[in-house]
Length: 138
Image 1 (cartoon, rainbow, N blue to C red):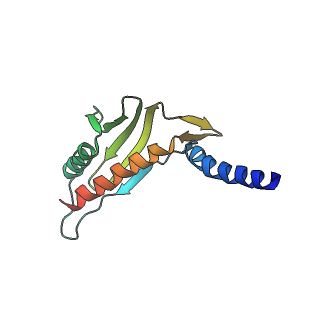
Image 2 (cartoon, helix red, strand yellow):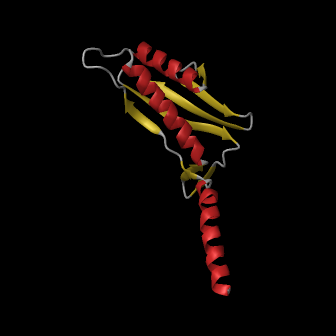
Image 3 (cartoon, rainbow, N blue to C red):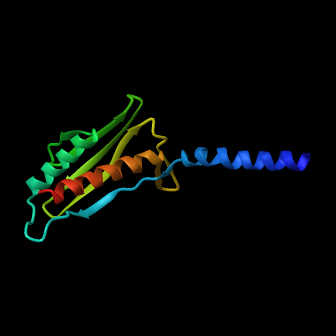
């Protein structure tokens, strides 16, 4: 009887521990110098890259604020509880998306490494994918 209880406890622990572990902070993924996708016969301009970023951000629910230095500040909010802010720099051939700040995203630094809730990387990857789609539609 005890062995059956122990087995049931171990199985239940494994099932319920996995979602809890998935919520632990993970390393922040910054996208530095990402090559701008383009078709073979069309090389985009910096203005076209900016338009693609703006269109992708709007489609994904991000708010973009142009900065005086030519960069873009992109904010993504979820249920007015969580927010992430990234800085986007761009040129005709590449762009970068880097962490700026966040609210209620378990941000921390440990041993010089920036850590955050795993949804941060999911949301920024979604923006990257949308930018690439917009660039290929130029």
